[in-house]
Image (cartoon, rainbow, N blue to C red; front, side):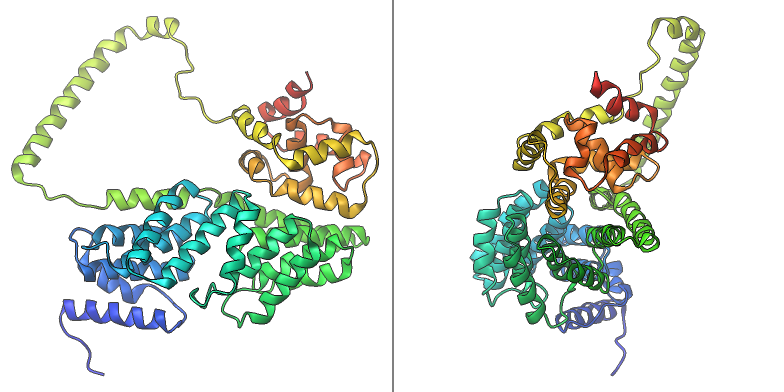
Length: 464
């Protein structure tokens, strides 16, 4: 093949080649090819080719696992498309909303999904409409509207318009919904359907993990152990990996395999560190900032002269004020309070999250079990503790305490939050799989791992 000559020809060749490889589902190795096009077209001027170059970079970056770069590229593409009634404009919105959903950025995702679906309807694009409906169903699931979400996923599981990468995913989400609703045989059935239909176009790890959870609830511990191990083979999602390691540690502990239990617990702790370092929307927000800051504006000599003069005047004013204030420094120090730095987020700032949790069904279930003063079976405790650990209302609190501590383990985190909610220390063993003596030892270990202010808030202030 003749090598294209000229910058524009090379850029167009890079764009077309990237799109062909992407549509043929060829694995992306790097973004170096499409960068030839984005470097030439830049971010400044609207145009179909420039918008498509950035859209293609978003696709490749998402495939390589770089969500922040992908979000930045999609935002740039959306701004550069000269016409909104273009299929790829709707796809850019669709893909960006999917990234926002994966990072639980619901507020940012909703307007994108609505806009994308409206464009897809105008374009009569059945595939884009189906994917928007898929994202709406995911949004409903993340917000615990299980009935509405289930209804949409039941319709989507038979859709022929979803892409090969997502066509079987409704089965996974239906399995999640059945598990939450304690329909464990239904969860296993949907997980098995996904495993049968999935032809290596997506990871099996989530299906294995859900099936393992359901089997464990049905007291098939050995089978659950097998599927937890399988879930780690091709897993890439940190929450799934961390949870599988924690469950493997618990099962080994039950069987008396202390060495294996310790090994898996350490793996879970390491993955918890990974989750904490990437929690929230920091990377996405950085992409948004870099997108807005990377738009150079034309500037002429007159504007530059005014900017320099203004800067010099401002510097002179600051120096003068500094010299005047220096002589009065001692008096000001005596009269003004020292804590003028804006207040940082503290553990006490999560009261609204705790109040929201107290409105949940899980809280009522915990209250009933504690008040009955009876010892629950192991699998009952497991079900409640798992729901407690993934509760969306407690996610921010859990992340804050872990990030502020010296690697608290799962039981220690649960214990802290359990007391913050208002439960008593002596009742912890009624909900979680830990002995009374083990619960007492948690307090000693936590004191060495968390700042004094957090320890006092949980164990001193809460007991007053």
